[in-house]
Length: 153
Image 1 (tube, rainbow, N blue to C red):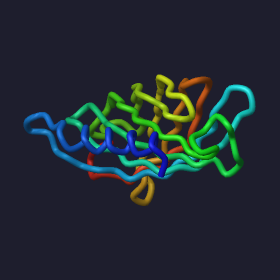
Image 2 (image 1 turned 60 degrees about the vertical axis):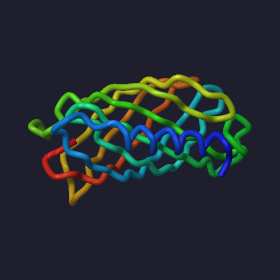
Image 3 (image 1 turned 180 degrees about the vertical axis):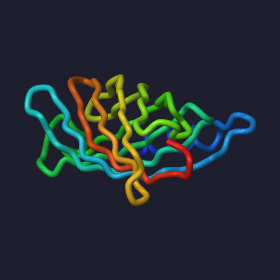
Image 4 (image 1 turned 135 degrees about the vertical axis):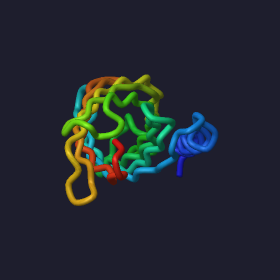
């Protein structure tokens, strides 16, 4: 694992371990995703992530993505790490679709600020499908499957 990915993983673990408002439930959601990143030559990256609840309305996600084709813009020509904090507008799944927005860092060969908008669909066999669009050193878009948490987004 490269230094940049280690730093991103450590930052996510520390934030998840220390942030917990009084009365909030703690939960973790694993996720699988496929992202497309630009600009210039667009690269697709399958990836995995882990989302931690930081209270009722905030979510912290650590993501690791791997580009199958070598790309000089990525860490070790393949890797990317993201730390994203999102504000969820419907944390208790009262509506069928839930919108969230947020930002953070995307670590590649360079580190970029990231801004994302996420639309999460209804729970399907224990998973929450979502689409995510945003910017971080260029356009980014992704399809995400998060493990469903009972009565939570």
